[in-house]
Picture 1 (cartoon, rainbow, N blue to C red):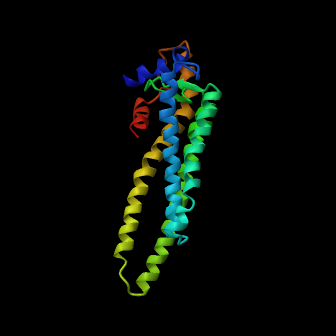
Picture 2: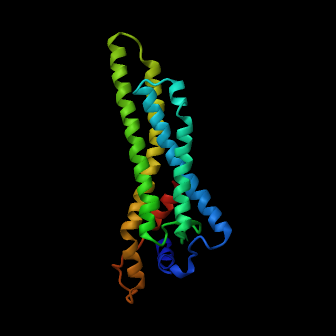
Length: 217
């Protein structure tokens, strides 16, 4: 029943509000969701980078703190530039399922350029830093064990970082997978909806559960 309700909503684009020329509330909702969503992903990359610098490169707290202004600049400037670009291109549109203003709901190019590609880059970059940090910690752990010293504290740190990694990467990967599913199938859904053969049981239909999973994550 959910999938059946979703189909006409995907096809009737004229009932979905577009662009940045709509109500100010729509723009505010877009900025709250998109800007802070992208900023949180960048902060995760920065946190992964600083952990790699501390664990893998043996940087001290003062050395890392010296780059704090650059971290803040990257975390807030990049989402600002992307948000301004979306507004300048009048690419804000309505999500037919959640009913919020976002980008890429009616344009696959915008979905790929402003949403999917940045999320993939952030996840990949942060994961690389975390992996490099873990490799360094495992080497340190081996050296400490060979010296006969206990590694309990180091192992607890590795467990905490591992839990942190899972808590971010798993939901982020699921969201990216949902976006890939959507951008891969959306054209087929819209073509099937516009087809004059509504009784065809083999028409491609969106899986409502995938959209709900994306929103839940």
